[in-house]
Image (tube, rainbow, N blue to C red):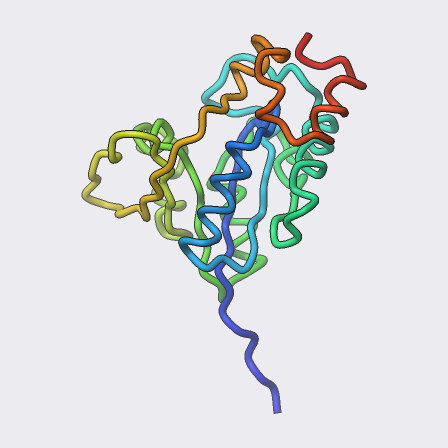
Length: 191
């Protein structure tokens, strides 16, 4: 007799992660707690269609920083799916890939309020709406309502910012996992 696999809760968390910081880690852990997640898949993008500038670190460096930062959270894995795919990195392509890989599980996509407010500009957003549920992390104000989708809201506060780290690493070293910081120094990134 075949038993069905239990239905799992899987989170997709995409971004540049240039670099990943402890704020990202806090958000992941809070989302895990809120939803009772079984697994998070962290997906660095090759090139966002919404950003003109390239990342300061290479794809391989970003993958390594993610692995170092997430090493104490075995439920969170790093995926090279977008980095290994053609540019730009479209979320609907990634979501389709994971929906096909996990057809019977609950699929969520973690985004910030800034991304939520621009979702209608994303390519094939109706495909994303069909494939998964959005989780919106907000620092201050609640995201605006939308007639076609209702997000799960996660409110929190962490001062870390990848752009601030890139602009002035020495001032923000405490926002980085110690092994990630060591890697950044060894690779001479963000100086």
